[in-house]
Image: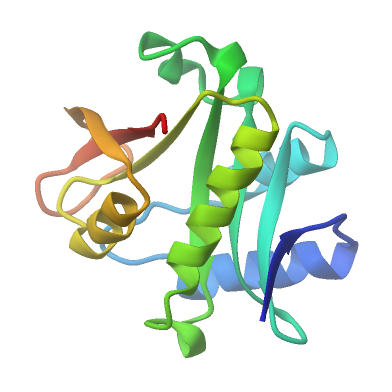
Length: 166
């Protein structure tokens, strides 16, 4: 398996969309076609990149958004010009439980630092314990938790914002 970033072609975007829509949604995750289209456009515009896990095909990926392209709401925590934001981290369900999500997260952090980003932000549902463990292993720490009913439909309906500044 190779974990890296590279230029994407039309087939890559189609495969990523398929993985996102098939394997991404669960009680903790909020994924819409609009958000997918926005992320893919940021990649096309050079404001984000996809960190891919490939084994003859894409089996997982993370979207890493750079600096001013990060969600503006994050400006309350830090200067957008020095941050990165990791959006979706998703792995093909046939490969789940093998540490691929953690590997993608670590590679995204490495690439963010290479891009001169001092702080890397990520969000998760407050009660998503699997994501919490993966993020803790990657040295993310909670900076805020807030009620987020438009994005969260289960449990506490809270979003936790985390930062890695190592």
